[in-house]
Image (cartoon, rainbow, N blue to C red; front, side, top):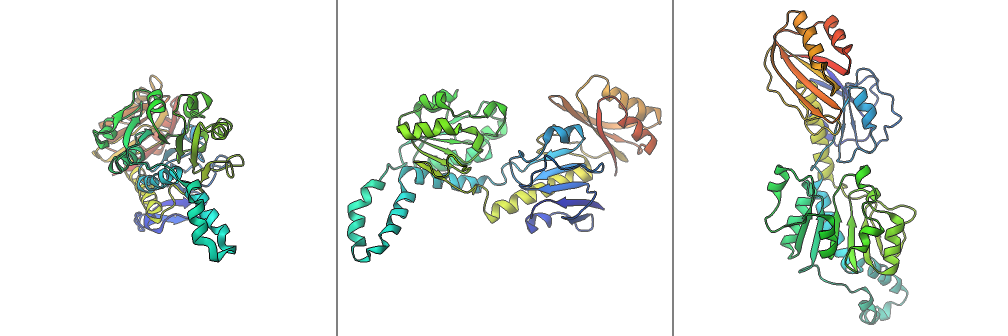
Amino acid sequence: MYTIKTLNKISPIGLAALNPTRYEISDGMEDPDAILVRSAKMHDYAFNPKLKCIARAGAGTNNIPLERCTDSGIVVFNSPGANAESVKELVLCALLLSSRDIPGGMKWVEGLKNSPDTVAADVEKGKSQFAGPEIMGKTLGVVGLGAIGAKVAAAALSLGMNVYGYDPYLSVKAAWRLSSEVQHAGSLEVIYRNCDYITLHLPYMESTKEIIDSAAIAQMKDGVRLINLARGELVCDNDMLAALESGKVARYVTDFPNGKTAAAKNVIAFPHLGASTPESEDNCAIMAAQEIAEYLETGNIRNSVNLPAAYLEPSGNARLCVIHRNLPAVIKGMLEVVSGAGINVENMTSKARDKHAYCIMDLNAPVGDEQLAQIRSVGGVLGARVIVH
């Protein structure tokens, strides 16, 4: 029986993906094998020695201490693409809201309630102040062409927009999702120079922090409309507010309001609604639960944000799974322990990702507690366990 602790309210549909005869799930679990989390802050969370993995029911993992998890031999999963439809629909909403001042117009109409007899006439007189351009025929730049960006690009094409896409890390799988009508931009400068609307779909990391700043904005078209439903930190707030004040940027739509942007001129701020649909919450929870189950039961890793993907078709009688630093002789040390116990390796795979690696060995017999302790003591090993087939 595996144990799973939930740190937030997780969709029951997602939890139902875990076989109740094999999993015990509770928000009060003391020593879990795995954790299911959405938004709970875990940077100060004390990891129990038994903890093997953490799955985030969502895409971002800023609330999880990735480096500390890796050093503790804990795999961290996210749910890429599970909320893509939800975010895509909100981007379409943002495109329309950024074109015409619909929020301002609605607020203005509410102010007419004290003059009910003249509302119709007042509307006709005042409506021009909320007018704006159609999106058909305009050019949209999609920065980041993962699951969400690809859906946004396809939807924009169907609405009659011209679409440029930029993603220096575009995978073959992601490329197959893209329409041939999406024009490839070789640089961000191409996006800035050609696009009337720009939507961001990037992860937040050191290299993308405040990627939209005064220098980037200066290269954009006058009156550009920018949509950021990815991460608030991708945009420099002070530079954006200055651009809005000058008119260089006509509208800024963000899903991450803060003290500077919440009520700023020409900012349309959503209360972090990108994945706030029941369908998205269900899909993210299902994917996270499936990732946990596959890792705990087979050792295979999919959609990890801190370790490489690794898959090995089961063979032999037992499986040794080892998380280690990507250093010479680590695998040699493990093999010496295994062979010294008279155990044969029937199949194996080893995958590396930057400074860390993951090795799966299928054995003709399980290693004992003594050998497992020896493997854990090999220099560079961060975590090791045995799964009996």
